[in-house]
Amino acid sequence: QKEVEQDPGPLSVPEGAIVSLNCTYSNSAFQYFMWYRQYSRKGPELLMYTYSSGNKEDGRFTAQVDKSSKYISLFIRDSQPSDSATYLCAMKAAGNKLTFGGGTRVLVKP
Amino acid sequence: GAVVSQHPSWVICKSGTSVKIECRSLDFQATTMFWYRQFPKQSLMLMATSNEGSKATYEQGVEKDKFLINHASLTLSTLTVTSAHPEDSSFYICSASAGEGNTIYFGEGSWLTVV
Image 1: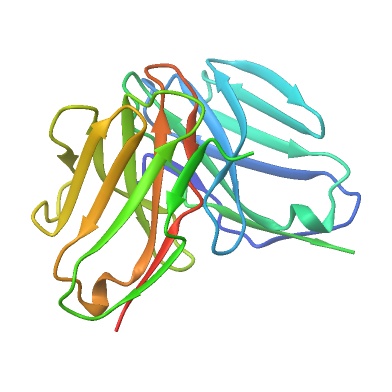
Image 2: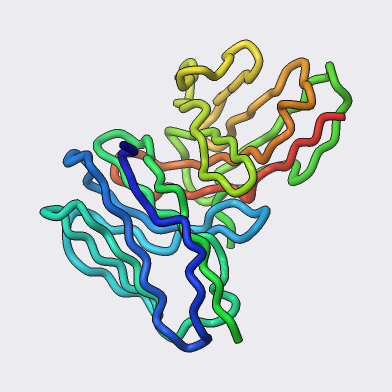
């Protein structure tokens, strides 16, 4: 079993819909949780960074962390075709080594 | 704008030659930098962790003599692919952090094609 599980998708939604992404993990030592967006043939771009459990909102993006369930989510409101990309969850314990999910490919159709 | 810069973005080299890729942190001092490799439609695979002024820590299965990593300053790390072969063709990405608990930013990636 992988340390971080993420549905590969593709997740297809119509423009304007809410995109809901999630990851589960097994390592209870993870304290820092991140979501990255990666366009084809580009490096990952940091979207959200949260520490421990709770919610964090930034514009159209909301990240949720539930450490008791070992479950994190990312919601994208009012999705746009430009949001079509692969979304990677990542997390780490003490130290800086990230553990990634496999990524979810998202398609937002006009 | 980008806070971590990689150069070159694209490189083609002949089999048997060596290629150097640079990773620079632009707005902060990076105590730790990471090098990843990514195959098409797959997630990032960590190759090594480099700390400024010390030897890199390589992940299991990564040849340290083939993938030379140098982190000579707090803003620059380099990855040199030595005696490159076609199977080394891949997307190489670096990331950098200012320290424990700090955000980790990624570079734009470097495409290496060995012919």
